[in-house]
Image 1 (cartoon, helix red, strand yellow):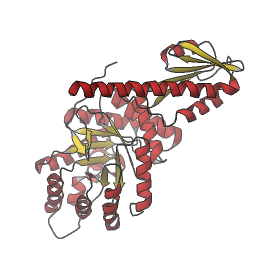
Image 2 (cartoon, helix red, strand yellow):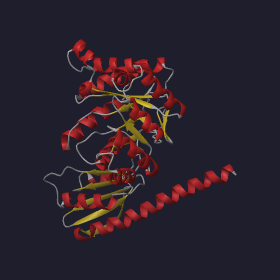
Image 3 (cartoon, one colour):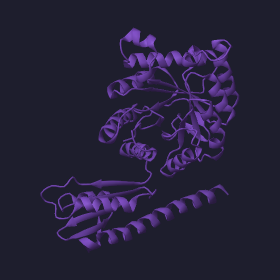
Image 4 (cartoon, rainbow, N blue to C red):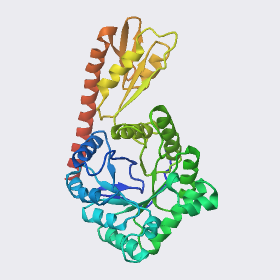
Length: 379
């Protein structure tokens, strides 16, 4: 299915374009104090290793803002500074070389810091960001919605989230700033979906998707997949963050699984495995875990099917690059539906690894051939 995507204005976070039909960007947020520079850089490197394109860091105080200098200088990824209330922290982050800001202009206007007027505070941030081509993400969140919207709507409804976001956008637009990205996150999946769908009709800007405070484990996976996945299915969304009570790497992996399930991402291995039933004649649970371990880190676009019996096995084998079909005490390896190897169950993983390496080599040679062809045609 060719899905029609909403085409938004493009923003650039460092060298990463977001919006305008560019590939959907998976990002996450550092999960330790920003002052712990060593651990921040460790998490940034781990994030890059599993595919993150952008990362966010919290800047709650002056010490965190000071730490940004060393972090930005050594970061393998473009960084967004997450700042609330204090305009001086935003200016410090910009001076440190940050690639983007996450602020809510209304919070800056309402904050009491400094002796200058409320508009001068925000204007100084906007002027500095504009001079260095630093985009701003407006981040409206159901858990921190301004009291005036709560008073009007009674609770953080999706209409309240959208009205708040648009009011924030108008503040920046009135200052001549349109390098904007927006999020309207809620911990309620239905409100989150409704908010983004309404917002997408009202503004031309790139949208950052997420279910805020989604939780951990199964609950977090399900909420994020339904919320983010529903919007992406309808062509809405330019960058995503899966907000889990878990590691940075887990957030990013789940993000890519959502993209792969919808056909937006071809990076890595897609695993298909049967749920098992009374026909099973092989230890499929063990087999799947062993295969997952073997394909971890493979970046080539490869589909692997692992089936426990001969009923659905041959059918899935026809669609997969590699299929492992279990039988009584043995298994069959298929490539593109063609049976190429039969192995005892205790040798099945070795047989799979052999075929996997062949497929990886072929994929890489095809990609290399394509690059060489492009180079020769441009000479």
